[in-house]
Length: 282
Length: 193
Image 1: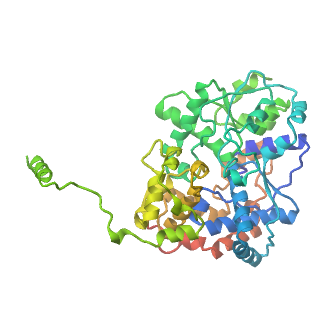
Image 2 (image 1 turned 120 degrees about the horizontal axis):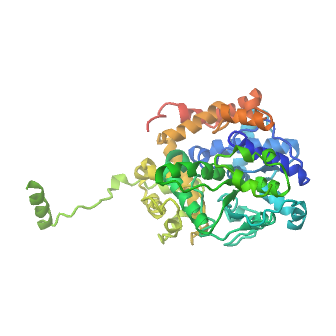
Image 3 (image 1 turned 90 degrees about the vertical axis):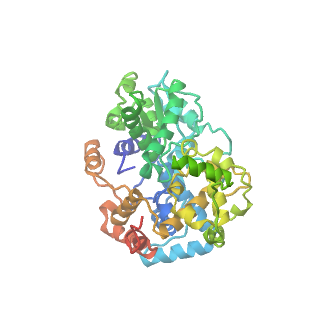
């Protein structure tokens, strides 16, 4: 997030304190590392580096908060691996100890959306001073926020609604569209190694959203965010100029509804301009 | 017309071209290794195809998760590990959720990918990401444009990550040395693909 979307990071830093949530930077953190690529190359490396990040949070006396589904998946799964396999924990502890890091696998990982949802919809509604009435949103959950369902805090269902509820608390409408829970197509190293397949998955999602009348996308993951921001111009070049859905990260949408200056939310730094939509509510 | 003559001769002789799995291509220990690495229910696969039917990559390519599971069970190690198809899984985890035998399909794919990388099969773009992680502690390091954006947005220009701490970066590099990531990405045999 800090290296790819400083504008989204800015919105998180501006919005969370206004919701009464204090955040502290994880000093010296590395890449989570990515669950699709790095875990696919070397699972032991992935586990050791993820555990180091968790150990930093543990030392600071906190849980890890992440705004990215990929990081969330990595931390949740890395905790599961060491909790289920004492010998893996020992191995990781041995490596971390050799670089002076203590690790007990005690800190948990939370997604930003989890924290915001737990504040309660009524409390959030009270913060809304600029309702986004009439805005039609294509809500995108992403994969690793929800799956594996056994390792996630959400009540298991075939049809999640928590993010739609969070979108609608702003006054916007979260439209029903075909296959809302379809992948964005970026993960697993596919975006990195096979761009045509990757953006064709994004195209399918975009078509489904557009067909349902969505005017913008709301996501909660830096990689999904990249996929929707970058694949639309690519698709426009390749198959005709028809993809112009502005891509909001959730805290940008919420911040806008809370009356925060759009520039404070980094909304002027998007690949696909958000100006026309934002201007409707100023 | 030498071609048609040959073709009709083949038909007459009943010499139908077919794919033969040779015993030499089967490594019976392959599936044992996948099981040992955590995909413990893979042997219960009934080839129902649920995994393929929900796969977003499979919708638009010839990638078939079911075929991959079957080949793994048969022990067609080289075939599986050398195939670029192994890298078409977007790790969306839908197959893992839907498998009626509760096979951790995505885990099995990740395990096979780890094996592939060990054998030197790594796509060039993936190697680049891995090299960036080795050098900076991030698979996607901070670039000039985003550093500039951070400055304009009034947030700390260099994030308080391994990017701004030599000690943290040294730790991360040492961890990767110990787990063999350096050797895997940069070492002898790397670049075989």
